[in-house]
Image (cartoon, rainbow, N blue to C red; front, side, top):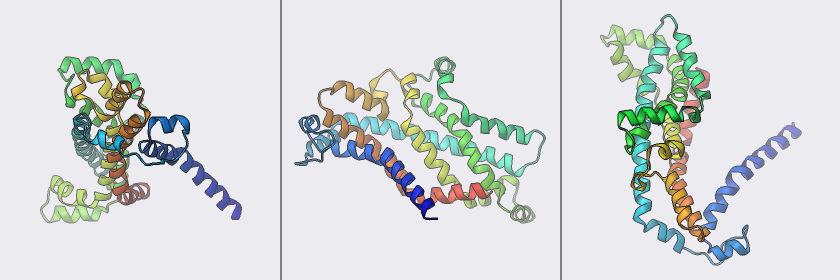
Length: 271
């Protein structure tokens, strides 16, 4: 037992070292000067420099990029959750021929790499006139979030007792009324989980915005970080500050919804 605990602790420390340490390096590096970073890359701020973060927060460019990412993230999340919940409802509460095959298609969608769809997706968006348009990024992002949304929601909805549906039908509620008034409220933990996953995925997308946008006024934060880095190649500290602030909204959103996410994933696994 002690050996198992030791292995578990070593695994936890390894995960922390791989994930948290680089984040701390980025955040703390923003509180230093470039000269301090060059002289001691792994050192701590001394003295603490606030100008880097202050300059980034005072920049209209940063807030424009933040607004673009937030707009696209909200649209993609709403689309993914709306269509994903309807598909999960049909796949969990209706019995029809080929239902499991349809579900298997969505499950296989988890393995589909976006890089394979780059060329046809670009041609499709150009034909629809969605280049340089937030919808040209939000709609494909929602489509790529659908598989994980359905895979999480379907078992959660399927685990809700059929007696509730029968009682709702006896009370005069139609299938749509049961879905809207009973099933969705009971599925709130899973809905929060898929919403967080869809939003964070959209926030971190780099390839799709790069494919759709050429005008820097439409860039999202991941593209903005790359652009800012190319513009300030000699100012490493300011680039680290810009990168840290670009990560902060998604991290905060994820941390605030962490408990509800765990509940949603637990219910999906039990379902």
